[in-house]
Length: 225
Length: 225
DNA sequence: AAAGATCTTGACGAATCCTTAACGCCGACC
DNA sequence: GGTCGGCGTTAAGGATTCGTCAAGATCTTT
Image (cartoon, rainbow over the protein chains, first blue to last red):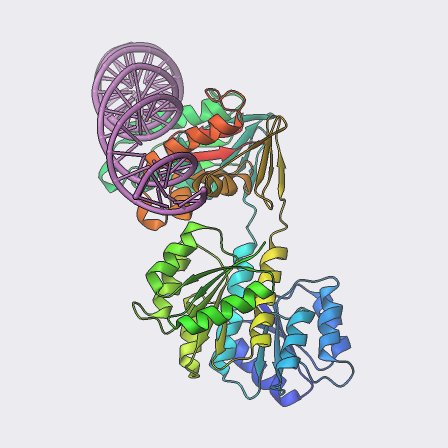
């Protein structure tokens, strides 16, 4: 879930924004001055900071500069000043967007979504599955068994991918068949026997006695880390 | 070097922007309608697209949506319309920023810098790739193989660039085709075969037995340092 | 306008993968 | 104890995909 840090010296604005943002499903944290804003940003992971430039204790641009010393969290600036020099200075200090008051709430939310979208794009989730005998990087599609790379065919990979993304969960034969070969092949259980044998030969240390790719007789298969 | 793609149906605006941007040290590419904008974005790596919403041939939001099918290049929207619903729709379609005309040039440049900054530090670029048989400087677009410079055609570069920026990661044929040729060419797998052969002939010490540009049959290709 | 480089397209043998069938094993059930 | 159905294993053929080459089309540059 995304956490938004709202920084403004006017408690009414903070409250109004907090209610709106919570209504959108965001987690909201607030601050009313620069010092506590920086402190608050360091306390927990924040997805976006919404920052009013007119703070009582320190200049808004100074807040951004200080934040950028150690954090790259996106900053959306609110300001009552329309002057272009203010915008340029704030953006060059490290802000990512700038809206002048009064602003439309729907525009603010849209710009917020744009910042969040880009942030989530760049953070590639590390999908690493490790067992006692092999390691799989689901993102890179790379498999290593005792230091050696293991190659997989497309079909082998499709099956393995489904099993590995559902650890400990029983996947029925029909599920596997329809996902990999399509609904028309839902009865071709032969295919699974052949490919499960291949996967075990490539991955298990003792293919005849599998410890990770387990058969559930009459039901399906299960991946046990 | 950053490349900016300027898209506007008014040639005067395009020219004015191009001159300003070139003065800032950017490389500028231009387009005056949506189709050629998308085509242009697929031709070469673009750092930011500046897009006017009022294009003659297709809706600006449609351009963004089509672009987002295969590219994550930051988009800065220019528009004469101040309505908040326009902003919201453009941003939700995938735009990263939105300025209404008339705008200050200094503000535009500042927002451009903000987009470029985030793009550059979100991906800590490793621009120097070294293997046992060749060295590539992705920034300077320079390749050296056993002391000799190697020349690449634009298409060869696009493919190599994608592979080298994702070491050890399997890139599917569709990914490569859509990134390099555009989504319409997602099934033209011959192209890849031809160009992979060329890349190997130019880079591998033993092109018939490649050690760095690896084929994963039925899936795609992988760069192994 | 010509020359050169680059891109597209098609064809072929070679390599890889998928499908299919046969056989043996094991436990369940009669 | 015999039969049956589900599972694991193996191997061979047929189908698909890959690498390679070359020629024509297209784009760039001179």
